[in-house]
Length: 364
Image 1 (spheres, rainbow, N blue to C red):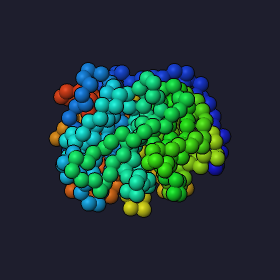
Image 2: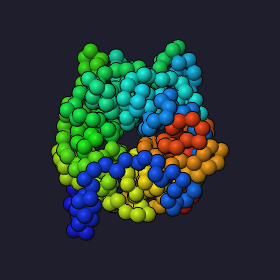
Image 3: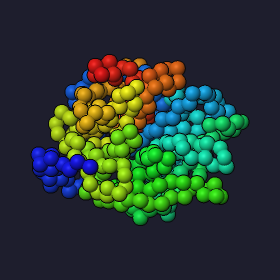
Image 4: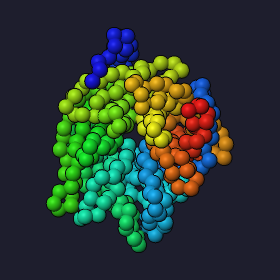
């Protein structure tokens, strides 16, 4: 792995020296949106159930080439979204609620394929869980070939020594499924997830490192073997997905006006044909920087903002996810789903943005 250049290392030290505590977004940026190419969201989910609090947090998207059934409803895929005070929502690609799992204090959620239980391929969901007495990673299964009342169901958990699990993402490394947990205080834990003979999850810790200060956003780019981590008040780091590389990393982008305004929150990777993009959330000015990452080094291509349209715009985002390629009929080339901190009606929710609109706005 290439070490930081001197200039980047100095920038990291300067910013890190100021990052002694979390700068939580408290709505002070409401109505103040940074510079970025404007796009609009064509649809949104209902408000999460917890009213009057910072509750909706992080989404994950899964799509199928053939329709599946969730709770008796046929759908081409789903969006999982956390209410970090109450549990996990499963939404259709039209934004409607398909299922709610009252699973407690789930914060970040992700989804992965590649594991089978009882000889049946499963979609696995994982979420960082801050519920007292079971902190760690809570796991869920969805059987895409299931019928009748088929739905997302609890599977098990990965225990950890992290006191307050925060960020979470899955990654594929060869045939292995990896689960990456980011703690509130900057702990980094990486596990290999397998299925035991009894059909229950089995985990093996393969890396532990310290990021340095409060961190959350997590996204993997398997094609380049990259693991991107957002240190909220410092900047965007690239780690190698190979756990043997330990805590070696490169600072891709420090916190800086016009690029990332603290907090750096959600991170996600989108495949668009041969191109791959990393999208982040600059919570402090409600903008979304986009880097192209399929070249020798990440290249910032611009930022977008989500303005009022069919539904209200997006401010103060905690989390986001993206999926390229066909995602139902409404999003034939991909979709980005984004948490909205200040919703115009009701409490916090999630909004869907067509990837074609973002691509056109940034001339990608």
